[in-house]
Image (cartoon, rainbow, N blue to C red):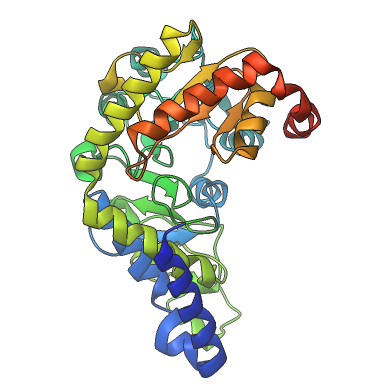
Length: 368
């Protein structure tokens, strides 16, 4: 957590205490727009094209609500290695009404973009794909996929949760239709502050059915008739936003903007390469792309009893996470040092050698 997040949280509580209901008019109403613009600046998005949401799943639901699954264009192409929440919501949206095509990975680490491209045809409505695969940190060739989708009139939803903040990207150069993500991971912003980018020429033409009073042109008229959509990013909002999260996410956005994602990427590549080198010296399985240009900020190392080892690492204040079919996910960021990389690997080795992973078996069972 950035130190300034505490200050921003205090600013929120002070505003709430001192201003009460006036805070809406004087501070809170514009906060989703200013937060969205801060995030948009990191991906070269135009102002007022990024709306704020509670989580990526609800942002995806907002996109889905813009479309009818009318034949013949009722097909969605995705990858099996997507984050499960996104697979769940697309399966249920399409159930009995459309076709879901899932592209598998042969090795559980990489996925050839050509296989996604080959599945996209004139029947394809949406192509929701991750820029970076959450299990393996493999960077997809999003540009080629987007180009193919546009050739046949399909739209791409690019999930940048695992990339933004450590991998540079430009939504204009990619010409992506939608992008979703959140501040929790590489943007150091905590939970509850997620976002949805919509390409400017689409923004004011789509009519999301998953909507609410924030999306109304005259929200304080409290009109009970059909919604009159506003313009800009608020068109894709719905109910009252998570104001505390929008305060605290600002600290991380400040820092990432100050450092620059290009500099973070350079440092990240060095650290992940070092992690892979140390793991391979010990004969451990590495579930990460060997090519640095195709590897984002995380290295997954699979060792015996990986789930229990991860629990013991966290107890020793070496903060990692565990994913089935991947292993121990180590995600060094700009604030980490080479010594910390070495320590993380040494601690794994010690935990395996002395059997201390056994005392974390119950914790590991709860995780899995």
